[in-house]
Amino acid sequence: MLIYRMPTTDTDANRRSVLQLGATLGALGITGLAGCTGGDGGDGGDNDTIQSNDQQDEPADELPTGGTFRIGAAQGIQTLSPFQGFLADYLIAETMYDRLTRVDQELEVHPNLAQDWETNDDYTEYTFTLDEDATFSNMDGQTVTADDVKATYDYLTSDEFSGSASSISGVESVEVIDETTVTISLANTDLEFPKRISETGGAFFVVPADILDEDPAQLEETDYGSGPLVLEEWNQQNNISFTAAEDYHINGVNDEPLPYFDALEWDILEDEIQRANALADGSVDAVSRTAPNVAERVQNDATLVKRTSGLQFPIILNTTVEPLDNPDVRKAIKYALDREAILEAVSPDGVLGHHSGITPIHTYYHEDLDVGDTFGTTADIEMAQEHLEEAGYGDGIEMQTFHYDDGVPSKEVIAQVFQQQMSEIGIEFEINRLTEETWLADYFNTDGVWYVGNYSTRVLGESVPQLALRSDGIWNEARWSNENFDEAFERAVTATDTETKAEALRECQEINHREGAWVGTFHPDLYGGYKDYVGNYNLYPTYVKDFVSQCAVDK
Image 1: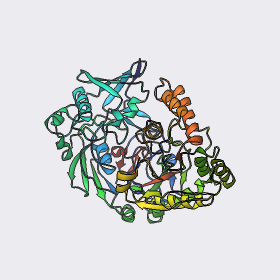
Image 2: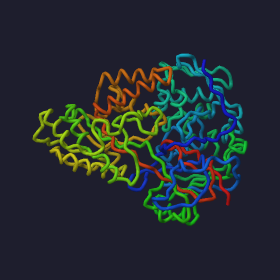
Image 3: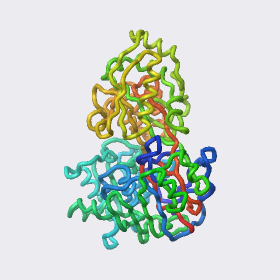
Image 4: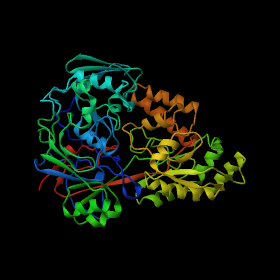
């Protein structure tokens, strides 16, 4: 039997380049909120002096308390419900509500509502022990219990819930053992389940059973979370204010309950230049993700930090689009692709990865597989033409329209450069701009179309391949099927030790990189900024998983 025990304080000291995705990063179209879990202030600088997150100071042994922390954010929110919304709404949910577990910057799992857990030998049953000090907001100090965990699960798997509960899709049952103990049984082995239920976008926030019994719609207007911050005031798309929860159940480095500050204010500043100016003049203490092209505006007044993301912009070679079902045509496209040129056209910073769906920030990324394996990172026109000849298209191909949407501005650049590069080997096609709404409703994951996709960073490196690359993946946009890949992936997800899992996922990455219909482009660097009186600042991991409660202000 394997047991996890809760550490006494929350320091999150590990540092590796990981992602937090939000809505718009300059030309990349990405924002988020700068998470706060390490380092203190310093001087800013231009693109040559922007700090890597790894260059930040080690966490302080003691941090100042009190004051108001002000954040310049790009988006307002539409709902308070932790089970609804998108992007900014998720970020607010992470602030007000707790899950059983959470992850740190290293994407390693830690306790949250569950102070410890144990599992059986085949990882099909997990028993979580809840923190007895966790309480809900606006519930007269009501304690979080195992009944609340079960009620949340029952609601998320009921007909009453219309959203996605993919993070608990493998759960077979939830059993209340006693007030602070709950056992979750799984249909299949899952070595990563405690991490899986911390997935951003996953709905498994624990809410009061009483509210779910009375009327879940109450969650849309009132904060009933057990998180470190309690909603004070909110209007749709306007500024949002919070106060510190009383006696939050997780301590900071001072051995006192988080957060360090007394109040948090979100100032909604949709324009990136406006946010940069607010940071420079001190109207806000930190900003949403920002772009390097605003560095000059703040270089003398704030610190800018960057880290590599796990965001992905794959070119989906949909095998229902003729002749993308031909492996040699797909290989020709990969040989003709100049990924270095695409990265340079879109962003000044970033890294290349594999054509595999697992990014360089993830635990099981295949570091021994060169990013230029087989196809290189720049165009090899001769090899591309050889494969077109082999496929019977030596005279070139007139293909149907290639699509991109306006939800992420970088997709337009990728589509344009891709079109130009393919023209060099005689693959010709028009490109078409769609609204994000049209793409999601009528094109995404649909037969007979091909396009630029985008995926945010997931907590688990295997999540995107499971969703998008398996033959039976619900987001298998390319309709690609490979028996060897499926067999290796099954070995990975049913493994009961990390060595077996790692070996199987390395095999998956090699197969998809060399044979698949997923064409990786690049992973952009992301940027955050803060004033020098802000302590414990760090760019946090994935999507909207920024724990702002760990920042401190001293002014």
